[in-house]
Image (spheres, rainbow, N blue to C red):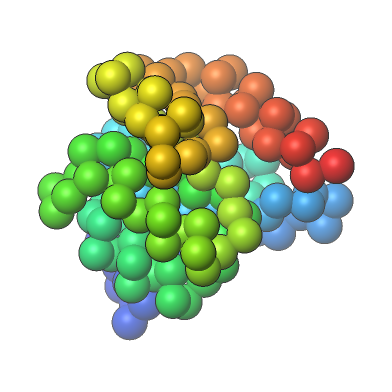
Amino acid sequence: MVAADTTNSTLNKLGSHSADRTLTEVLIVEDEANVASLLSEYLKQQGYMVAVAKTVSMAREGLYEMSPDIVFLDVHLPDGLGLDLIPFLRSNHDCRIIVMSADEHYMHKAVRGKVRADVFLPKPFKVESVRKTLIYLEQLQE
């Protein structure tokens, strides 16, 4: 859920581990509660362990506690651009990065620019688009 954190941890972890999956731990960096909730619930149903951060600073703090395999990263966050996290992620974590935005202007910056995400997922998106993206990322791991 996207509910307030009830532990000392910055991130609210959800989900379960699937032994047959190579990419298992997911960080969602998204401030829109409905998007974060939809994505989190779907990923939990697929067997992923999920953590949610609502801001860039929450994500940075949480990344010292976890090492995600996949990061869903919104572009516009309350305290900055999600794209600013990509260099930190690339330097400190071996993960796949999915940039999400309703503004397709960021597609070129995210996928072809200096910051280099793995996938751009335009908003609004359907669960089927997320499913296809996850299949693509799993294939990259093989």
